[in-house]
Amino acid sequence: LSPSISQNQPHETSRSTSQSPPRLDAPPRPPNKLTPYQHYEALGNPRFMCAPMVDQSELAFRLLTRRYGADLAYTPMFHAKHFAESAAYRERNFSTCEADRPLVVQFCANDPEKLLAAAREVEGRCDAVDLNLGCPQGIAKRGHYGAFLQDDWDLIFRLVNTLATNLSIPVWAKIRIFPELDRTLAYAAMLERAGASVLGVHGRTRAQIKQNEGRASWDVIAAVKRHVGIPVVANGNVRCRADAEACLEATGCDG
Image 1 (cartoon, helix red, strand yellow):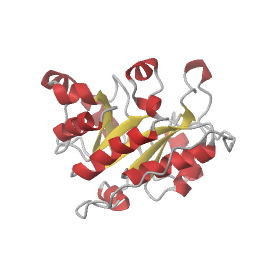
Image 2 (tube, rainbow, N blue to C red; image 1 turned 135 degrees about the horizontal axis):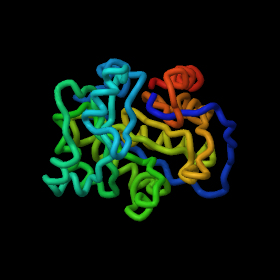
Image 3 (spheres, rainbow, N blue to C red; image 1 turned 30 degrees about the vertical axis):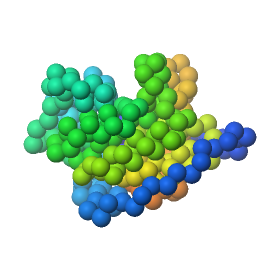
Image 4 (cartoon, rainbow, N blue to C red; image 1 turned 135 degrees about the vertical axis):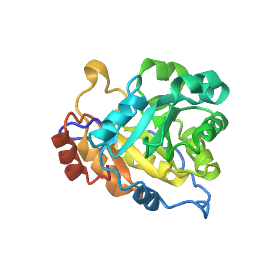
C-alpha cells in the first residue's frame, strides 16, 4: 500500500457510448520469467511501500522509510529518454545501495525503444521497472506521458509488452482510473495481457487534481483487484498506518 488512500467514495458505473479500444493480445510469457505472484512472493509479499514521489523518493529517504516499516520502495519518476541518452542525468538522479531492496525504478515514457534502453540501464540494480501511467500534471500533458497516455491503449500495450518480453526483471504499471468503472476494468485487463506483473491503482481520475482532487475510491480499486489475476497495489490518500490497514481490508489488495 503506497501513500496515499482516503475513505471510500461511491463511484458511478457508466456504460459509455464511446467505443472502447480493441482487445490486444500479448505473446506468452517467456519461460524463464516468474509468474506475477511468484515474483511478488519473491519480494516478500510487500504490504507497505514507499511510493514514487518526485523530489522525495531519493535513496536517503527510501532508506529512512525502510527503517520505519516500508517493505519496498520506488524511486522517483525518471524520464526514460533522458535516462537512456544521458549518463549525466543518470548519475545526477539515480543511486542505490545494497540495503535499498526490494526496489522498483519508475519511468515515464512514450517510446517503447527509449523505455527499454532506459530500463536496461537499471536492470541489474533493481527488482522491477514501473511505467508511470498516472501523472496528471501539466508537464505530463505537454510531454505526452503519465495519465495523458490513458487514451492510447495501443501505445501503452507496446510500452509494457516491450519491457515484459525483453527484460530479465518484471514490469509494473501504475495507473489512474477512468470515470467509468467498466472502462477502468478493461484498461486493467489490457495491462495484464500486455505483461504487467503488478498493477498500482490510484483511485482517482486524471481530472482529480489540486482543487478538484476529492477522495480516492476504494470501491474501484477493489473492483480492479477482483477483475485481474495479478497483484494489485492500492494508492490514493493514506496519511497514517491506520489508513493503510483499513485500505488493505476494504480493497483486498496485495499492498
